Image 1 (cartoon, rainbow, N blue to C red):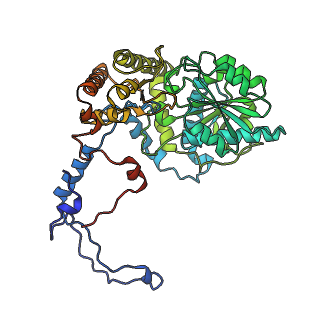
Image 2 (tube, rainbow, N blue to C red):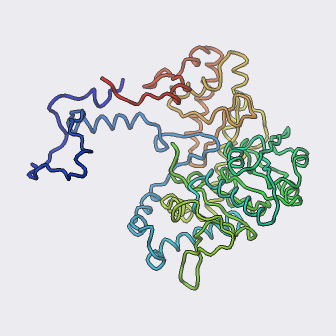
Image 3 (tube, helix red, strand yellow):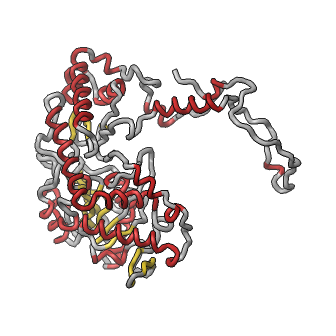
Length: 479
């Protein structure tokens, strides 16, 4: 059992030493009424007890430096510490956001150079770093969709989204004032071409698509898909959450996409989780450059400058340059790897995923048995039907073995889904340990299903009522 810091309190103990205050206690008359003189009940602990308490708590947390995060669609790779060191350089960390162009040539050069790298990787023509995350990039994209068609005098009001899409795709389209048209996947787990053709008409603004998709499968008909959308006057939006599978191998711009967002906090190794921090830059083809948020970074001779003069800009969608700390970390990662290294990253991510898939395909249900990219989707369907053990039970039992669970119950088109993405940074030993745990649990689901249904058994907090924990959290300490 882990005590609260209040429970360690012993009267008279303290973990600080302050010089005597010789200043008379006076309050400005304008703020006196706002001062609370009532004594605050703080824990009384020594410095040593304080340090040991929080070290103990930190060891209870799971983090990417402690173990593998096999979260599908999240790309929770190891974060090289050199990224953190360089992001903390005074020339970056101490820049005032209102500095003039002459005073921030270094950071503007970094943004300009990184933009060129991303253009090479994606085949796009211009980028903005303002969006704070992937979904924010989607919002930027849908605003560009809207203004683009408004300027053409076309009142298109529909966005097509596959049934395997990330939940943010239809949510973003709806926020942008569009009606979402969902199309089904075919028996191969990819976009059904006939469904797409049927959904296309003069009111469709475009298609939101992830490639490879959320099943970890590459859309082999992508050129045909792009032709169907473009021939009807629509735009093609690329959700870049799964770019870790394709760097240096294929480019969205070559597939026919008009807009792409990237997740620097996923693909390019900046730490994330728990809602942030993130960065979701978007890139566009030439015909959409004038709609980007301002400012963008341009170069004249050897001088870098912020350009606010874009004819049809949708305006600002974030303060200043976006989440610049995340951008710098991603820039460092890109420069250290280079284009050849980033290609190797994607190749190893795909190799690791296929290795796990082949090791586990007979222990769990695998709906799509073809070669995957950087992730794949197993299912606890067989366990549920045979012994009543659900995917949630499997995920909870993994905690007893010190292994973080994969993404569960997504994508929705796979019943009892277990979405697994090992990334390229995990060793074969780590992957084999994961396989061993998954196989043990599959065996336990037959021999002792009740043990899984009440897991976890070894964690400080046992299974919660998750709905109640989310809606009615109790965060207040009471004696």
